Image (cartoon, rainbow, N blue to C red; front, side, top):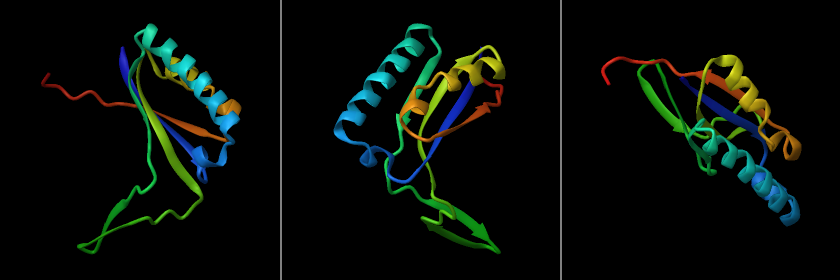
Length: 117
């Protein structure tokens, strides 16, 4: 098994843009999806990302930090999963029910293994 980081990207204030009924349905879908990943041993960690994130950059020796989003796209959350290969990781990402509720992109990143236990 190999680890993969799934980064969920959406636009706007995802959680506050949903009606209470939509949010409830989304939570039910998400809980079922997460429950299945736990049951199959695929989920290592997952969390939504709260507002207030910062971007740290360095240019010509000057460090800056700030909310410098040049797009409306925001990181809404992540999943750290275990999968046999990138193909399985992509299938796990495609099965995420967030696509039913919220316009979303999911980036699938293979994690590099570094020796040294």
